[in-house]
Image (tube, rainbow, N blue to C red; front, side, top):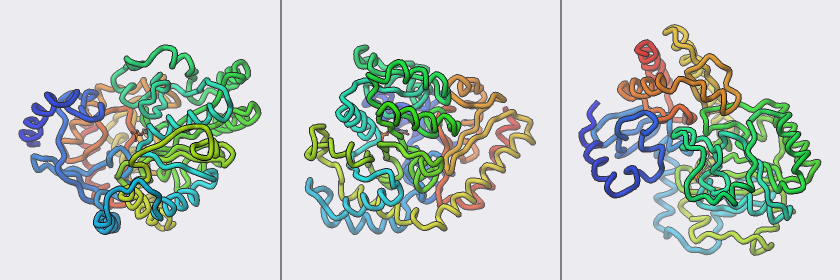
Length: 427
Ligand SMILES: *Cc1c(COP(=O)(O)O)cnc(C)c1O
């Protein structure tokens, strides 16, 4: 694998940007070595500046569910760009995307577009606090909700990767408003609510946790969250920034049949451009300015290019044949990877929800942050580099989910399974 040009760029970038990157996990710290610099991508493939080609299972960390530079998305974007890139005024495109999102997520009666997942969760929490006139937030260990101050406690993703429990620069007074509980533990949750409900504005979670790999919720756990929050008039927020359109067309809430009060979206709904959204019950969303007293705004929110990419993406996802095909691709990969690890004699636990997945190097059932950490990260490191060397690009951290796209061909999956078998053998 040639890395000369990537290394040269890295040398420069590290002088210009912290860690040489604009988002921490990109720096490959969890796997050691230097990051590769990408020059282009098409379909299921990503290409680096040294001319190496990889089958991509990162897909920009989830958004590109159709694959890179999907023809109809590119075509629509080319047309849109001629009409100007931003107006700061309402457009038909925003109405169209909002309608598409609402159709997929019936729990969303009204929504607001923002520019990132972080903005969505930050705003949803503000609305929940404004609505309930309470201040505390319940979150779960290992769930990542973007880099919102009060949520950077036991926050998975970059946090889990670096083993940093918190971030510097977050006042302890903010964090004191956050209650962190173990994921999937119904009893602890119930007891906590019973004791503190008077102060609790909202409960926020990733209904399938994608920021410490891929952890499935126990159904009784989700049910208890819904029942208890309803009983004590606490706002239940599903952060479906990753799971939305990934676990199923209607996200985890549709798959598990649980209706949250508010939902946060991002990633897929922007079709690869920067978008987030939050929405839910009308009575709660009417708190948002200018209808209500909770202020939230954005210069580029509802950006016409981002809306266009989102619309084109959701239009294709709306067809039932799309999810049938995605399911076929994903189950082929699942079977192949499980098989390869078994044949190679490597103990792994494999989990997946719709089109997101994770392979943990452990024989402990992974149900929360504690059990996720039983994974052998040294083995993962070797696995990562072995795969990269064989032309397979997976997330450079054990605690990230993998993704497939509509553009992943049978041949891509076959190649990946062969590479995985060889790499497992090398461990
Ligand atoms: C990615 C992610 C976010 C943050 O979204 P950004 O667009 O990176 O700000 C929030 N919540 C979840 C569940 C995510 O996966």
